[in-house]
Image (cartoon, rainbow, N blue to C red; front, side, top):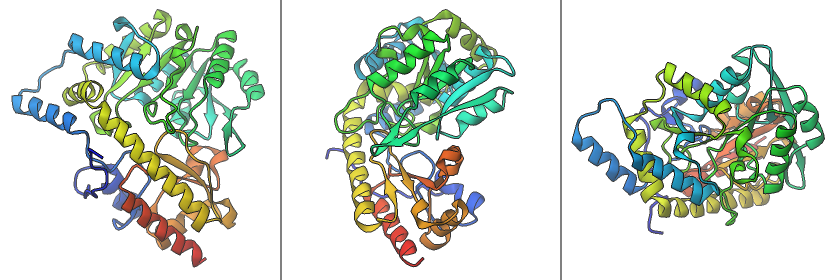
Length: 388
């Protein structure tokens, strides 16, 4: 490989929550953290070089996004996701979750219902409930080694909601929704006049050569859609707080644009602007090598669990660097599983119950790390389970 994903880099003391938050949350620092969804890899050298050049300039005033920024976003969406946004459809936000929260606040009223598909990323829940909206869930169904959508229930729930928050690819279950699934969801949402805000932050991280795909690329979807993407996951830039919001329909775009301006969230982070541009313009080969490495980690993880930890069950993720592991066959409560992992194995995963009641018995594991780190964590897990 041209790029190095094997070197273990000590991140402690770098103000990163994944490592420096261990003491605060778990009371100890000697744990292998496979919980928070960022990666333990240095960014692409092209990104570091662009940051260094901007740093050397030495002045960090208010930002203006130049035409090259918009050209970069448009070209990336066209090449990677299959659709071509126009410049006036593009907004920016410090992150995708701020955009989701703004969509809930601006496109619904207190007391309105908002639909999510569970188990799902925990902030989806609070994006609804924190603003006095009613949470409505469409539970995903474990079928044939992966999760599927209960479309009968999905359509039933659409009749009572004002907004649908889509996670695509899905965190934590690792599904890359097919074009047929996306089109069916989008068509039903149009039928019942329910706008979609699609969180596609993991959209670049797709395995087995399947390629990235956005619901925005499907015929007839753009008029009822807000789509969000970012280099945060795929280029490991979450700390630089930069995300893209695409909305073709002025009725969906203008309320968000107004609030972004009123809250002064539009200005952006100097290094976020620079790194997004360097990532999407200059670092695609790094991303392709990263995907290969992550796919190797995924396969190593799945093979290890099947061979060495048959008490656990894991579906093979189609996308993301997150594995959704079923610990229920151990016969332990969620708290007991967490205690086993922390106190006996010395590792931290994300408890599945955080993703909804459907996540009880599960843990989410982040395999975006050097393989030796992943291997050590799995060996510790095996030892702890063996001692039960």
